[in-house]
Image (cartoon, rainbow, N blue to C red; front, top):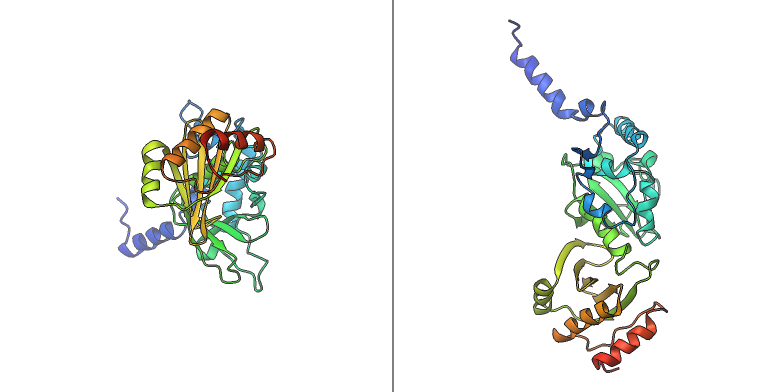
Length: 295
């Protein structure tokens, strides 16, 4: 029987705790669970897309190698997304023309500040930047498989990271919910309407009673971003101390009428809804008349 000294046992244990990535980084994680073809983290987000991208083993291997180069374990939910075909371009398509970080740049030091900043050493992995560089998103390297997302808003060279989403999978789901068939989707044949209106606690309670509440995110584009869906439509609410902007999307006129009627019953619509979508303008004008909303 081999006897291991207590000192050696403590050294080995410390090595395992310091570098848990080493054992994992030699394997390629297949993101599909079981034989159902379902993804562990991003199944709901993928269901929002027009078509589902396939798993790409070469991309999965590249992610493992990237983690080895950085000396970290890239979180499982991040790897699951990035291992899909054309994942970076697909993600970028369903944003406000923002810039997801490519695989070969994940973990690179931030070079737009002087001196450059190594976020990995600070326990962060940069994942995306806003199209004009106003905001940056990162996941916390906290050892969890689906880590929280934080965002900084125009705060370099000493970024102030604030909570954005409880998990990376939540963050990605909300991006697709907003921009793929949602209130920020300018590419699809949707009816879009906006309105500036206060968000009172009783109105929020009514929305939670009459609609399905979707995940809430924080920090950008507003302090709090509420999401609701029902009646064949979606409502996105940007709310903070600067004011509240409501964004509505529907595929049918009847669905848009139902949502606006609900808002009117909540004592809202003191201001008439508007739209920048040319195709929606005559339809929204007819709805305003139908509901008797004054200008």
